Length: 299
Length: 299
Image 1 (tube, each protein chain N blue to C red):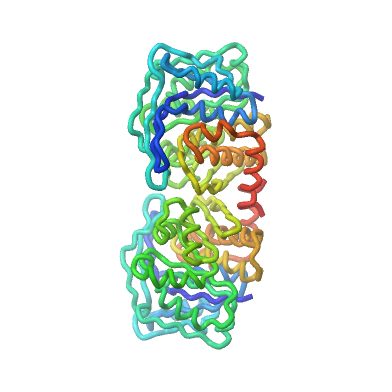
Image 2: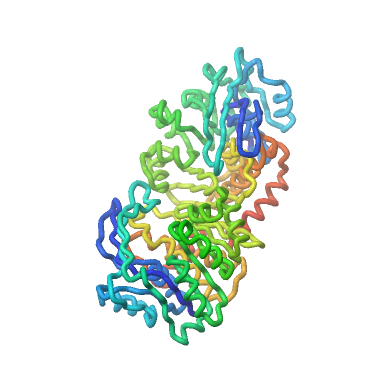
């Protein structure tokens, strides 16, 4: 039980065909937490600047997220500005200001170092390795990354993969890091690079899960009213890892349920801006949509 | 029981990273038949030229496909030449020679006009309408088309949709004809245009099925060794419609099984060139892979 997530807490400015919002609370660790908290206690490890609004801290705490290791550093909070057009499948990054993220070194407490489930969301692989080095009894380690690190810290990222149970990537990242076009070949190559299991997120096209013993594949939950996809992948990871952490074991059945919960959590996330929808989620909302999701393909 | 399929019988020249083959037996009706025959008797309606090899006719007959309405006309057989690169997801058409297809008018027998299950595979909408006009007791009508007709015979195609039970399209075609980016919105718009149900094929990303009462969504069967995707969509349609024809009813459960059989049939098709793999398929091969497919997502 319990999961610790390392990642970003950010101020996101987003424009989609459905509106424009400035400096929304976002970031990989925030989106992850909003889904994972529905399954298990979450400890968040991240950094923000002195400019970070106190209301956001109170908000995260009110959602039960432990912020003992949310560092408030001198400088500005990490900001991302992006736009989605057309089918809303790809974000166009307009601006990124690293701020305090540029010099971030995570610190955790003794209690936190004994948490067994770990998710290293998308930050510099050096920071991910740094936190992993502090964990005393890791049982399940998930890792996400992004194109920027694959291109610029490839060696460090690959070295890290050998310690990872589940490497979580989107299809582009999986292809980029593996050099393989076919997504199953890509997953297999990433397995050979060291990750024990590989989860490829394909957005509106669902997910593929690869391990030596079995391959799993789920469609996405059909959402007509996509408003803002920002954080969908992190929300997916939160539901997926949160369910695994609560289950305390890895079997094909548990993995399929975890993938389904991740899918359903992400489907809520994209229905509104930022954390607007996922912050109001209750376990019974997930359960209800999970049942409807099953109806889409179970026979 | 029984299905009649109108479409093309062609000579396909295909190049993929795994080889190059000249004048393979292909075409939408041929690929469709190779999957549908595993479920129900198939009558094929198409035209070939005097140059069409007799061995192909004997081959199709040996697979149990009824060729009473395969017209052998003065002129050359329809030829398609294409290439797949990279991830093999998109065909690059190098050359098309319509030949006898340009002046094709389908003729069917009295027995054939009473067949209740009809699939109008991709040919000129005028030819599709012509055949449909001859059918006396249609119970289930499926239709496939392509970008060329959507662009050049849009009005005729839309008029035809009103008589169609299941419009089968790939994701690009669904977006093009509906003008909607979101695939569920696209399916909904196509429903409003007249098709009672809409099936969107997404290649390696599975399928989405839309009707007023429910939405179904299945992933693709994970295939690592994709050799030649030509005809995958038609093979899918053959398995899907063949299963529906055999079932004789439309329920969510029957539809999900039909989608799964279509998926599995298509997964065999892409493992070899032309009809090389599907012509050797037996019902038990489909059943075995269907069980493995279920393991990928059933929970």
